[in-house]
Image (cartoon, rainbow, N blue to C red; front, side, top):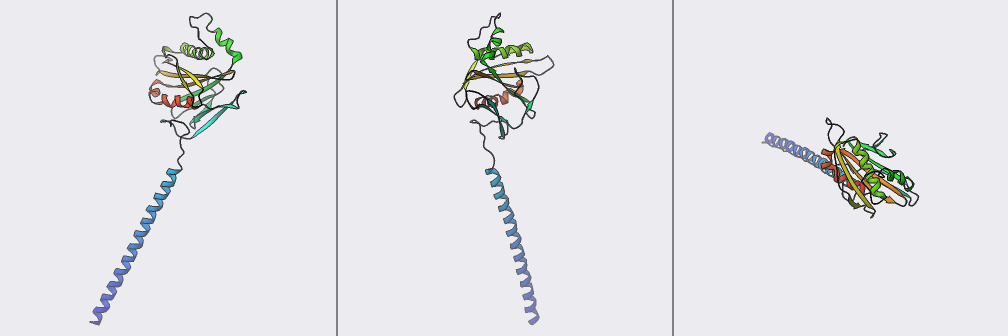
Length: 227
């Protein structure tokens, strides 16, 4: 009987130890799960919010500001997604502020045009049937016509109007076509606005295929211009 009691005591002790080990393992596993949940929650909270009024659908939230000095105000600011990098290709009128996002294969440029240069752009239409109504349309139509010369089967949209979120009017117009019959169709979106005695020509370039998805993002970037 004595041996039997000793044996029962040993068995009970082993079971108790096993239970304690299992409890500790379960508590450790729970601690890991809770820690992971807390870290995940923190990461979600730190995700940057879009600075655009309407969040861009096809670009990351990280952005940078391009500041262009203006004598009437402190500066004109164009906010671009961080994938854009400055390039030195000839894609715009002045080729001073040209940017390319390689990930999306999208180009964006902004040209500053002082009022003193308007006689040059107006002279282009002197012997043409086209007669733009104002300086913004002169610049817009000049840019469209220059692009048209390099495209085949070009299709030009009508003028449209929008405003920046600060209330600055923008006239927009687009053109699409092919550089040659072997290349995909290219889409150029232009927008022009005025600040003081200077005009600013915005341009976005992408394939027509990509424009079906990213055109609204491009217009959102235009509208987010700040003065």
